[in-house]
Amino acid sequence: METFSGCAAYKDYVTEALTLEYTTDFWTGVPCWSCEVSIATVGAPPRAVAFTAAEEDVATASPQPAPSAGLEADGGGSRVNDTNTQEQGVDEADRVESKADGSLMFFLDSGYGGPSQVVILNTADPANTEVISRIPLDDGRFASGMYYDEPNERLSVVSSGGYFFPLAASTDAAFAPEPAPGAQGSLVVSFDVSDPVNWTEISRFHTDAQIISSRRIEDRLHLVSQYGIPLPQELRSQEFSSLVYDQYFTALREEDQERIDELRAEIASQIENAVAATAVADLLPRNTLGQGGEAETLSCVNVYAPPVNQRLGLIQVSSMDTAISSANSIGFLNNGWHRHSSRCCLLYTS
Image 1 (tube, rainbow, N blue to C red):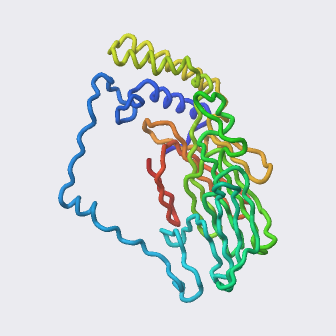
Image 2: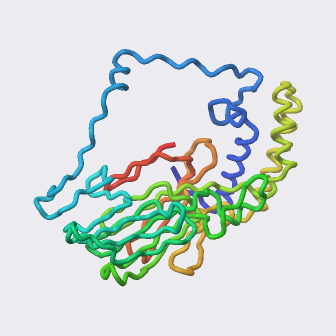
Image 3: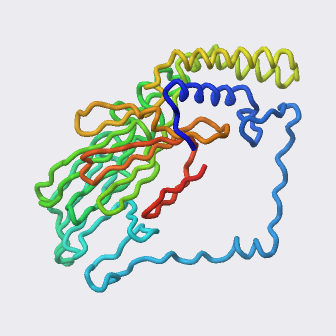
């Protein structure tokens, strides 16, 4: 994968990807990207291949439990067990966090039917547990998890709005319904909980992208988010939709090659003009550091692309310390969803 030389090269890539999206048969149901197969020749999908005996044994074998850290796993220094951790030293977001000595617990209430909040409990005496404070999270998003950096006494809460498109790109309700005000994008907020009764907000990081995963390694947070690159406004019209899904589809069905070629050229021309007329800031996620900070668009030269054709989609990886004092982000043009992290590397796949 290589980065783009500049924003013109990035827009060229977007143009080519959208042209493939609308002038090849992927969108008609052919199970491949940028296929040149006419819909008239597409038959039923191939019948599933039966397992061999050996493969069936593997597929039906009982899953083995992953190793986990139990009570006193560190030689007696902890009264609580680690949760949701697949790689040693790589913490995953939880809904419950606790001090190692068990004296303090944080519970994330995601606000089903009401505002989200973090409930802080004194659990030094399990027989007399009490709520000592609450951190309200009423920002219109779904609080999906949190991290407790105990050495630095910081709590970081991750929230998402549930939309892949930024509010500014959703102007045509017929094609891209708007998210609720204030609910677009994703948010990470860091709190100083050294005094759990009088906690304070340290900083926050907001992104237009939808956080799909996150990890904490020591005092650093790593966020993986998915950004649905919005269609240029000119391509969200009824006229363009009719050109692609009515006229072009009909020409494919009727195998009218002259008409197919004519419509492909028209679709490609409209896409090229629409992308050229769109500001690059409307084709990349914006990230904001701090309360009321200025949004910065992800730089074109910080976006990587593979040397193959693929459906348009962007993965953003952002890294910051648990105080969110600074943040760095890079992008990958790929519709990746599955990811795995170790202390050295982030792996993801489409």
